Image 1: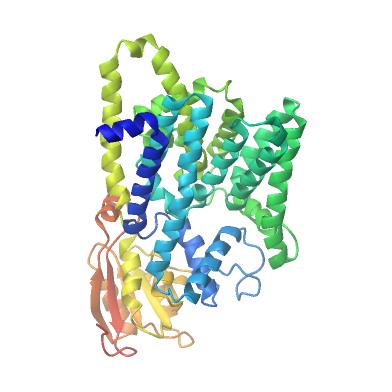
Image 2: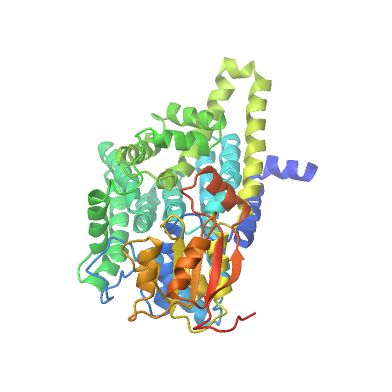
Length: 510
């Protein structure tokens, strides 16, 4: 303990980075699966299918059902395509091994967020504020688990933090243009991953322009624009013959389908921040951030505009505001530390302050240990891994008791069969079975039933079409999956009952 205290007092960044490394490595090993739809089916499923010669989402020109740009960014999934191709070349074909590599790379990338967050706070306020900011970025309950996910909202954060660190750290004036140019490239990379982060370099450029800092404005804009044109523009030009085709498609989809997803009230993201960052500390950080708005306006304005945009947009999902959370934590830590040391109220109430932070650390530690070891969407992943031992898959069917079958991650199956439930416009049991029994479609080798109640009525219906169906096994969801489903049934984490079609596969493979 004396040694740890010595390092904490003398070299806090080393301690913070070690904590960040330890929990992220634990997440690499134990936090299998995925968190939300997009961090698997938009990224991993797409890239995995490309390496196998398929196009799961029909994004690419020439695919059977593709009619043009769909508004999806090829840059980030394309990186995974190259990575999976290299791993296949090395002979690492097991999907779980590939995902260990993916999580490890993302864990390493996320350390940039911790390092830059500490350095930013240290530059702006000093070591005490930096220790709090760095510690929160390292071990906030959601950070290790989210850092190894394939969410573009998290992957974009290290580049935002690098950009901010470059423009805020102390430097010699003779390197001013180069530093701001490099910061522009960092912000450009963040834009290539998550287009909504364009508000960060745009607001910074407007502030420096208003301050008549012509060199900084030009360098930042040049770096960001060149990066966006070279990567996003270049990739789209290669595929579609003109630059920014997918960005234009994405903007069109966002506005034409803005009411087709989750529409929540304007104040929803306030609730997200206050809940995600654990009260009462979330209120401390919010107050700390607000009270420093004038002094750190170059940080405050981009975050404010980003927050207002997402709050005013009908489609709201909690992950959308993740790009602003780390810099919000950094400035909130700075503002709170300064306020707590100057406030007469808090000076006279040390025990209350200690209780608030003690409560926070207890709750945070419980959540941190829980989520760092959480295998999310376990039933779906393990059901595909179970079936992967059967070769030459041609067809699979998924039937759900609520007429809303879940998408199965074929990446873990390591094969890309036809799926009747993905080709049916009507997701009722009868409709899916009619599609599966179409003479022009390959008969399903397996039918997967999902639900919590009695699945026998669905099995009876299926046997009218496929009399050779027999029960093979059940794959159960993990504890956290069951808990999340119980708290909010919209999260369809349920048991999967696997039935084999003996007319196609007579014998079970052990």
